[in-house]
Image (cartoon, rainbow, N blue to C red; front, top):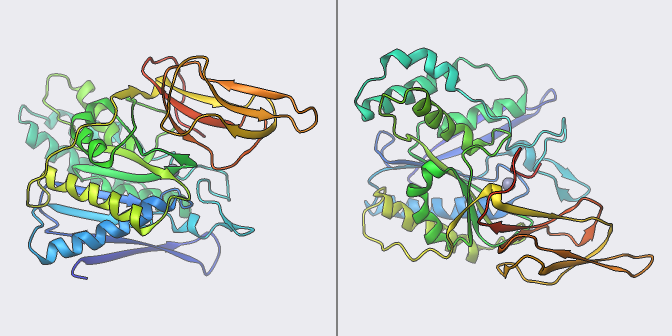
Length: 372
Ligand SMILES: [Zn+2]
């Protein structure tokens, strides 16, 4: 491998335990655009890790053949803490078993520190403002001293991504069509990626709540632009969360397909030499606040009436829950029209279980928009 490889090690929670995160680098570290790709922040989500790894393989070849023009960094497994959480034979990688915190929440918001550092130095040159803000973001982050392994990991992961032009955080759902979450301001830069990946839903929210990784990176740029409306502040970091199908959709075939799509996107961005045509999008973007989350009103066995990717209408039965005592079947109906794009991987429903998501085009929800 010709890439520069850097590893970061940090102390685990107990004496004598350590964790390691690898960061792979392709191209000149000073070159732009810089695209950062991360897999496995939720450590029980394999598709993103496979895709990140196989993208690294493709980029290794591209670098050897002189195709790298920009800079790409790849973290193939972002969460060694979660990867070590194997409970009775199953990986449990979404929440920290120590305190129940979601590994993709609670990232620091550096807006206030950056505004205090450079607010009066922002001028009328957008590119210069981007440079100043990137510097200030890194300096503000360096001032923070995380305590404990999970926040040390958050701090490190944000630091790897903070100066990138584009950041892709690769996840998956229980079972799902490929879909993507991003902010409206980043859509023009990420819509081509959605098209290359064949996304069946693109969900937009300015703030979805809980401070996930991607929004902590993109958020300060939008907040600063709102705070200093008389200064040009472009979005210096366009970020998204990509959901690469379901948890069991891990294969080298799918990994290569998705890595190939991201590779084409990198060509499109000019990170790699060459020319590609952006394919037609398979869906229009919809508001995350319009995404209906179905939930189980009763307990029982879950049976889906429609396949993922189906376009449903209000009143359509999406699933049925069979009561094991009485045999009564409770229909679960859509109340919005849109694509049924994600559902859990298990079929035993407890009361309140999330049963799936429909990408409706009309916003109707408020409050935190992401699953816990
Ligand atoms: Zn995830």
